[in-house]
Image (cartoon, rainbow, N blue to C red):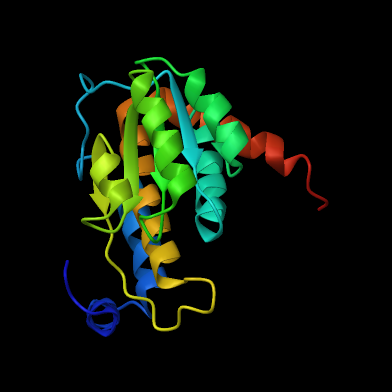
Length: 198
């Protein structure tokens, strides 16, 4: 949106949310309960495999994304080790997709993995800052420009922004899959409930 972080927080409060995290949750709930919003056509293609790559703080986002998409009955994996990413990339086909996360957009090992993925004919969706090497290398860049207040700590704002985008993408995939996915998710929840102490 090319606005400052305080502007985003003010907007979230103006629409009745406590902050960006609360807004993200409310938006995801609204999209999930309103299938006509952001509808993806059933003719849109889906990947055979979806793999998530990230290093450092971006690794946590990659593993969270893998968990969300795994629940949607997709073959998924997440890798934060350069050797495993390279082995994964070498085994991909043109029907597969890699989602690469980079808060800096300049991680050399991630760029090497992206090159291998593209050499195999697979698609790369990258969540990275605009005009960064990672965004430029992607088949489909989703640019996220967030300035962190303090660089010496783990970047928080960009991680939240990446997670928000993953939520939106997961909702889109869920909408595409239709009612049969809802039955699966209900069964999944029922099975998880059996693992909890009452």
